[in-house]
Image 1 (cartoon, rainbow, N blue to C red):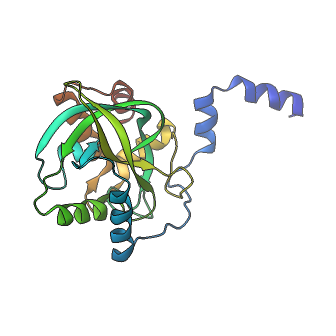
Image 2: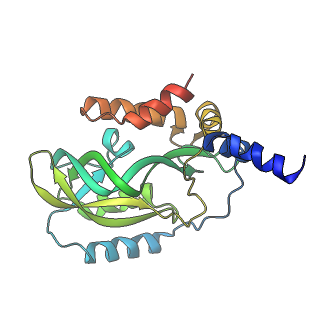
Amino acid sequence: MNNLNARALDSSLSFDESAAMMACYPPRLGQVCLNSDEQLEASIAETLARRKEKDIWLFAYGSLIWKPEGPSAERANARISGYHRGLNLWSRIHRGTPERPGLVLGLDQGGSCQGVVHRLPEHNLDQHLKALWQREMPDDSYRPEWLECRLADGRNIEALAFVLESERPNYAGTQPDSVVRQVIRQARGRCGSSRDYLRNTLSALRAQAMPDHALEATWARCSS
């Protein structure tokens, strides 16, 4: 095939088809840096030093909606701007293994996202924060940030959220359906399967009257 015909063939493929041809599962991922207890404690201290408000609200957009890490003094539906939810993080511990990574949700830049905020109680706060960091920050895939958040009742608050680090090895970006199907069928980790993770999150979002239509469409295409 000459170069002209090759270019014509390439141009005839849709973006998804081209991505599917290039994508593979399981992916080849670089090594991640696991956080020590000392690093987790330092991260908590640095994050708390940057907060502007006394109350600590946590923005939940995935499993923290239906499986919170500790009690809530208050809970409400909310929205953040500047980030959107996507199935764009490889999970080699909780929902997959190094040999068969799972896919979990992350907050990536652009757009907006509906979720649930939890106001953390002051009682045993240090203990709850450490458990939260152990769950969300076993490695350096996320970055804790304070984001402006609008509650369903109109209040504006500052909320803690774990956002994606797109330069890290576990960042998956947008994977083609061919890969998502394999993940849903095969990936299982310490906390269960990627299938259950996604199904439970979709159910929780529906229950909160904030269905994620893009994620619902992905599930419809890839879960059967």
